Image (cartoon, rainbow, N blue to C red; front, side, top):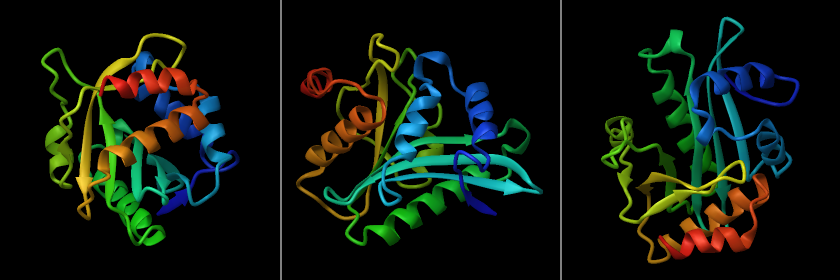
Length: 194
């Protein structure tokens, strides 16, 4: 069963699972989730999957209808439930929800950690959903006033667009400025290196 996660519904469980899953250098403070949740329902989504009253995974994503692009931020599955198609169900749900809200959706992007060879261990999983590594030098802004983290950007094309890079930079700016509070000047510096 899918549920919208709110401050009073599975939020603490989601934060505990999140803390166990992501390394500190790419883990955002809890306040960033709360900031995102204060955006309109159309722009930010925090969706969990519950089995027998237990949160077994969640996905978060932003949607910018003005630029027809979605941005999957986190996909997390409890270790005891991995290998049971939970991640695939959450991905499908998020994509369907984005497409139902923005019928002109052109792209969905997500960022993924990279190893020392610039490869992402989850690339085979994302390829199953038609996400492909986008050919830019992509940096996740420093999330705790620290240095940015090189990541791989994966993009799924739903409709052709000559404005894809503009859409990527707009949702990047919207997410990291509005939710994380990172200065526009700093974000523009990162964008200029892409």
